[in-house]
Length: 119
Length: 185
Image 1: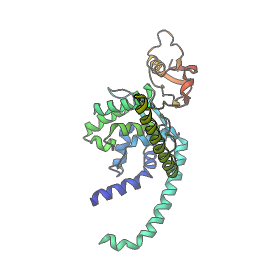
Image 2: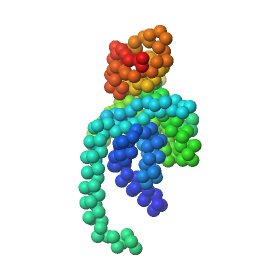
Image 3: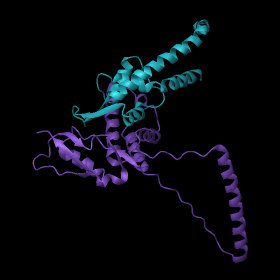
Image 4: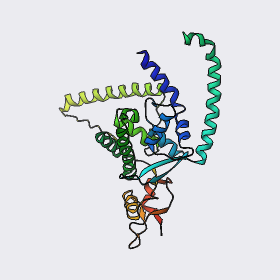
């Protein structure tokens, strides 16, 4: 039960910044959906919690924050690649700034209970 | 996993997502799931959502391929509507009973379910990188008009399209839009 509550909280916290993580993994090199999941995992984000990256990718595409193109794949149909667009880069920079601010503020509040967490 | 993708396709059809965009999403999902399976990664990790219809609806909605749901009425207004509805139903029932008593007539009530609202606009697919005839087929499938492909250039690769990829096209005007290609020489 407690584990589920922890998972749910983690999922909620992640929901606000997962778009930034997706933009970050396609900032320099384009990737298709599953390849992005793999890059997230390589950077330490093993599960993205409830939901999936696809609806989020859809939103990023709709908002023009990612550009897409197709590339031939080995033996299969062409894959759809995503890459951060110029406005995606700006949104990412702004989002990271906001994330660091919030993280700092929350850390300041929570730092006082460090001893409780360690127990 | 094919069953999952198949259910997604059905949901996109029900929601009025243009066929070619639904096919694009289905192909993307199918390829990714196959690769994940080969890597030993569970589908749950990729999809996060076990209900294909909810997953498909969320994806289409976030891409802006389905009409936004109408705004919900405020809670107080909703209560007023419920109370008024109950009173109206009560009055109708009384009238029906009286008519039934005196005229021995039967009354049938028909209900109708409004069909899903079709998409108002859709993003032009990215046809760059495809063979000319394939790209033309996709565009025609979406109800767009397309320039004819010169003889012998069917397999030439599209290097530019106009209007450009992802440009939003009002659904009703799609028959007035002619898609043109520049092909690799």
